[in-house]
Image (cartoon, rainbow, N blue to C red; front, side):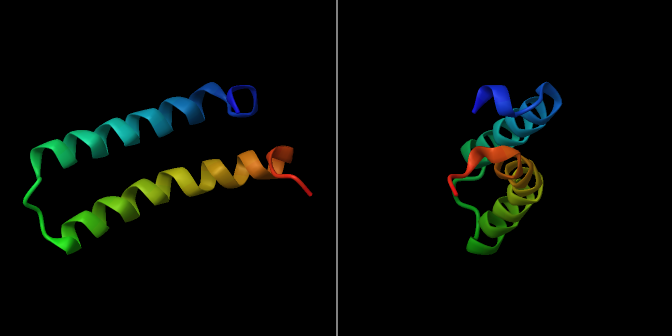
Length: 61
C-alpha cells in the first residue's frame, strides 16, 4: 500500500484521520447527524485517494 500512495495523499489522509479522531475524542456525546457529518468529510478526502490507489492496480482483477 505504502508504495502506491504518493506522499501528499498519505499526508492528506493522515491529517484528516487525525482531525476526525480528535473530534471524536472531544465530542463523545455528539448526535448521530454530527457523527455522520464527520464521516462524510472523511470520506470526501479518503474516497478520491482510494480510487487512485485502486486505479493504480491495487485491486485484484
